[in-house]
Length: 264
Image (cartoon, rainbow, N blue to C red; front, side, top):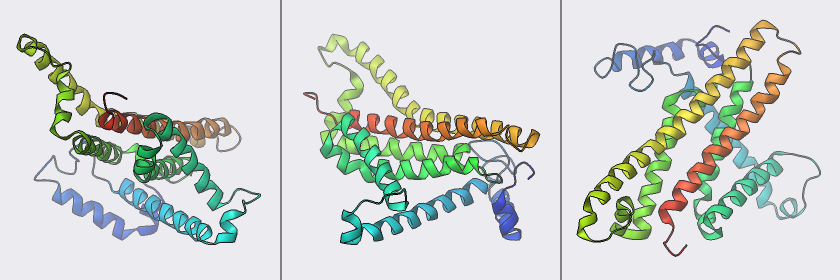
């Protein structure tokens, strides 16, 4: 399949092309004709359709698993094989266990819907790159930066919610006498740069790794479509899981640092 095309462009045909053409026209007053603000490349909607597809897939999986859990008999008796419900339970349990070790059980339960949703969406989005003819939406900076900004906003909203305006004192370092003001100003600059770099680092790390993984796999599939790409599929599967773990782990750490009290 030619570069820049996927099964979405093939199956949706004219509708897909019309959406891209409309976005290119709308984007002209804000950026170079036919280019995006962030990636500075041609405007494409493949990652948007892929992200919506993943969202619908996760909703469907959640509905199936939820229906099984609501049945008392099926919920109490574990399955002998891996099915939708057991897969969801394993992923949720792994995510909650990781969060509980970092921020404690109470905070982990509260933020599990957010971090768990990120885990499901990013995992399935990354895994789309292993399917020939699909591009992972997480290989596009617009998608990953949106995820990073959600974590960024959540971190500081709940930081202020837990500490009030005293949360802003965390950006100044140790507050001592007035003669330490230059040091506090320096700490403020360092902390601001550090915090604003967090969503960028989350976005760029995930995007770069998934782009590289998808490109390597596509190259090997193009050269030798049989047997030889199998090791690349194994490595690609590891990258899919590791990048999901890294994003969720760092997101949990950022939120935990914002809501933590000094005595903890």
